Image (tube, rainbow, N blue to C red; front, side):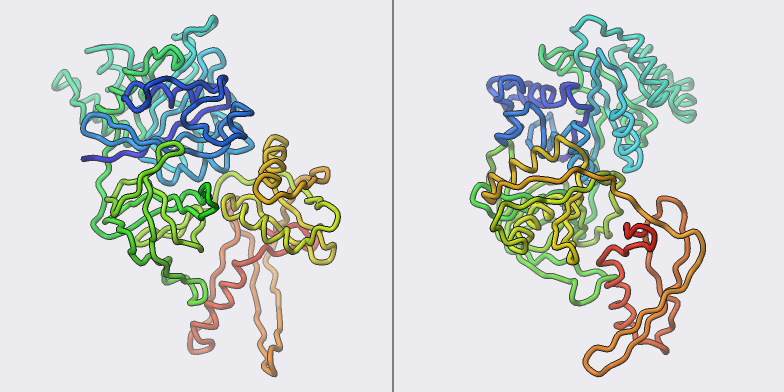
Length: 480
């Protein structure tokens, strides 16, 4: 059986979770349709989500589609939780981008499109709410082509008209079409996989209109990845179950994963103190809140693993390489105001648990001021975090007025020197700091020969440089 992992993405209120419900219902996974406004959506399982009517945490569901097993990942649509959405992009085989038929392409839709392009994710487009007044099919399609790309093609057409529109997306496909007068499903799927073609389906998820056509399109033209025999996995999420147990959500990208397998992050660029080896105690396949425990899973499977204590979102295991830094970063920083009598170090340990689940929180202990600072995307995330901390840790925290997260950089090369005198030893390290291309972040290298300084010491220096942020000289903001 082939396996395919599909993410559902959208600007908030486009009907993303409603479409997920419709897909589950039409494939026989649900007996009745849940609704976001009724607070009974299958994939919005957290009380906070049902109360607010928005998706905050990414969720998984497994559904059958012909000869393929689909894993559906429903992601947050609100911009404040876009870091959670971005983490799922690393494990997707393709995506469904949901667009509101009454609003068209919105600001966050463009951000999602750029991220899908950056991560190279083949994309289907579902234009929702076409049953509402003001939804103009021709105008929407023109807007998609103008703002997202000429590859956006209406798959509501049939026969020669559809194939002609598909063929013009690629010169080689157009030549084959002109010669043979047709294109095979495999050729169309190849264009989708190469991100030259973006099938567009119009409908209403709430009324189940256009949902069957979308499912048929996914079955005929969706990617069916081939995986290597060597074990690999990509972690995309850390969470806690109802008993507080730590769950590592990952996609197996090669070989097989079995219960009690020894997993490790061992790579050539890591020092020995950073390497861990732990056993996979249990493997769970989730659908909404429920899960089933299995003994082993093949490549292509998205699952949750217990027994791993040092994994983090984005991490690659086995043959998978180290993760690229995320494209989206928090823009606001707040001081966490603790209740009277609360020990800040105890509170910091508890908050670190949340940072495991969302590394973008960047929780920092400011030693001189004895303050805890946290970075967030906006006011909605702030309110949700306040409730989450109260529910999980029993702490009624407040937050200071937010300020912008600033960065500093350098304009010209400069040499820095540090000396260290631990336990009657002496060491001196020279660093040459040079400006890099915009957006490249911090990168660390050594030009010191191993005959001058042993590789282990060099690796230790590079490791410690990468472990922390480095304050600049203008405002004390992190250097980039």
